[in-house]
Length: 102
Image (cartoon, rainbow, N blue to C red; front, side):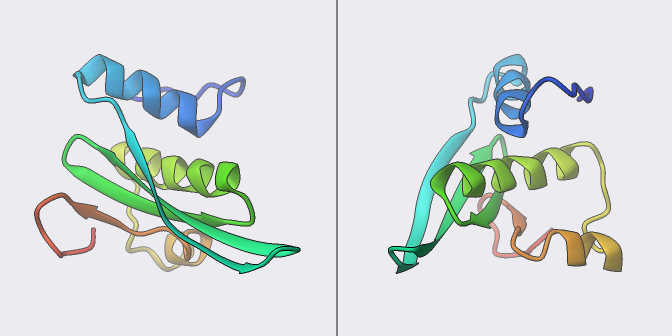
């Protein structure tokens, strides 16, 4: 379904996937906080019936993280494994229309 491509970012891979299924990813800025020299941004990406968040020190990094978490979920990665939770501690996913985290 989703092939790894070392030359492409998670954002572009998710865009391609969304185009294939007819549901373009939508990114929303949820939070911008912190001091000017140390900001922290939180973005949500929604594609199809899943929605994932990501945090980072720049808008680009936060969007990148959200797309990366969404791709992992779409590839069938188990977000409940301890190693995955530690690696994705700043990214959450859920099905749209529910409050249950995936």
